[in-house]
Image (cartoon, rainbow, N blue to C red; front, side, top):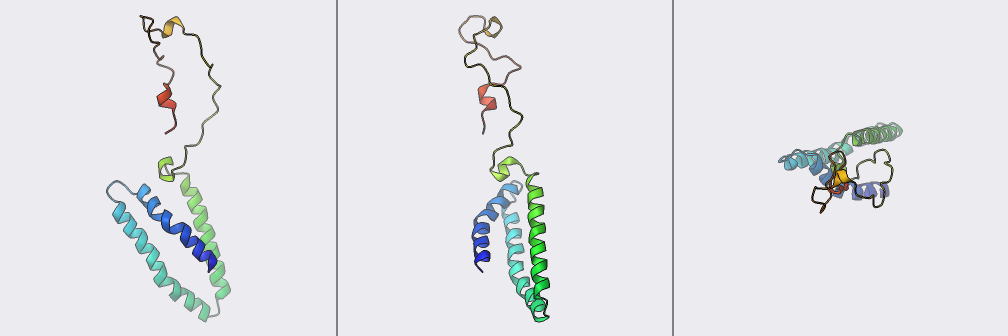
Length: 135
């Protein structure tokens, strides 16, 4: 029962937020409703199926089946997580290949000047700091 309680405490606040992140714009309510329907249907079917299995003396089979279903759900969740956008997971995007460090203060070159010598221009082939800053 303790495992169930801990799992419920971890699932309850996170599932609606995940559903909202994955739902198309304007459909979060419908998707949350379907998620709640699926969850509450489990409360209806769980005792019926579990009671039938236990009364038939299939407690070990029931436990093994539920453990296998949990392992399969975990594998599917891990596989699907690779296809989610980083914003849906609220996780930083995976780091790309390491870039060599830039020089601390490179001397200005004539090709970078704006013509009047007041402000250097950013070359077109190098990203600006704002473009490379993490979100």
